Length: 161
Image (tube, rainbow, N blue to C red; front, side):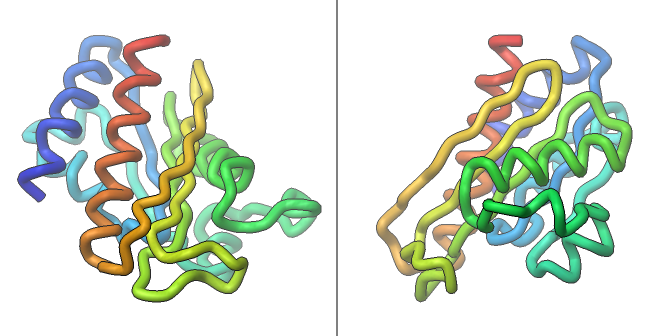
C-alpha cells in the first residue's frame, strides 16, 4: 500500500482543491484503487464509494449496466473500462468515475489477454483511457501495478482538466 499512497495523495489534493468526488469500479485490482484512496486521511471529502466488479453478475447488480450496452464490446478493453467508469460515476453521482479491468494472473483471461494486461477508464469532465501490459505473471504484483497505473492516469487526467 505504501507505494500507492503518494499517487492517492496527489489525487486527493486535486479533488479537494476542486471540491470534486470520485467513485471506483475495479476488477483485477481487487479493491486496491479504493483502498489507496481511502488510506488518505479525510477521504470522505472526495470518495463516494467503490465496487469490485469481478464478474458479469457483479456488473449487473452493482452498476446496473444493461446487456445492450455491451453489444460489440468485450471486457478487458479500453471501451469497456470507459463504460464501467461512466456507470459507476452515474450510479454514485460522482464528479469522476475510475474503472479498471484486466487479467492479474498467473494466467491470462478467457478473452485471450495475457497475465499483466489491464485497461483503465476515467469518466468525468474529461475522459481518458489507457492499456497496461506488465508481461508479468505475479498476481499480487500485477494487482499493485494496476492500481498504481489507474491512480497515475486519474491524477494526470485531473491535472489536465
